[in-house]
Image (tube, rainbow, N blue to C red; front, side):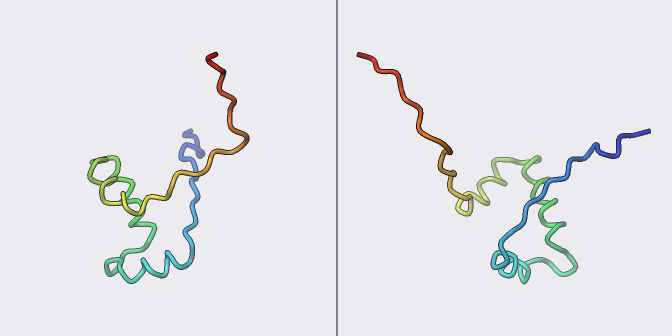
Length: 75
């Protein structure tokens, strides 16, 4: 019997203003879930093109958590 937990659940929730701005741009009969699955497929098929398409919308790198590491002194 196959493992029913073979596919991991991945959850991400967009901010409401982001969703409201995107919905009018979806093709007729398509929903946000279908678009996100297509985006994941595009990333797998042609990563350079897919990443270039979203480069200006990419979120900034998060600030590192915790205290900065002490670099050993070279004296």
